Length: 166
Image (cartoon, rainbow, N blue to C red; front, side, top):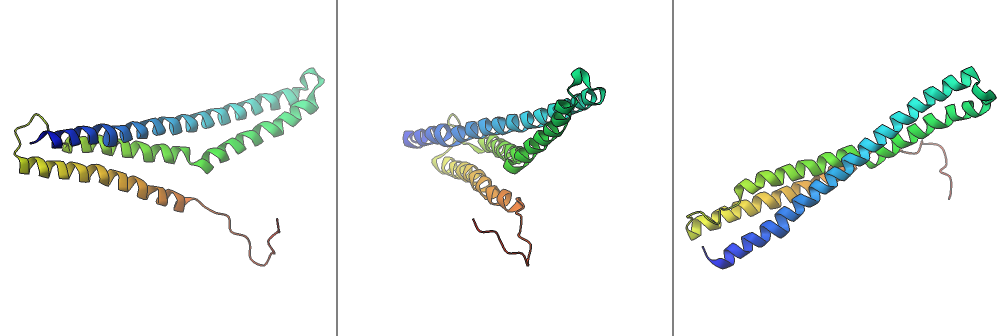
């Protein structure tokens, strides 16, 4: 195998394969964190609404009106936060990026060994299989974005009612 092919493989591994895998890993972690934060904060808001409801029932500090208003606001904020999390599909995006990163790790196995005793033809076949494997992961990842978008539910206007003008 010649040095040009070795340089190509090294550059491809570093700047196409490994760089993209690192990107997928960072995005997966970012979306997992966002989803976990949203779920945790929504749970804390609901727990807070329970505490505030008890304070309102006991009329602690003579602030029953304040406690009652908070009893309405906290669950509303929790619901809005949950809707935001579902709207941006943080958990689905984290799974998509995580699956792509795992597939790239598997593709690394197909990478030709630079230290191996391969003939030029064997190396070319191994390199071609490796490139097809990595690029296949990228194509599948791109295709899944269309699937994710198609799964989003849109609200259709009811028939018979005029649409409000903006």
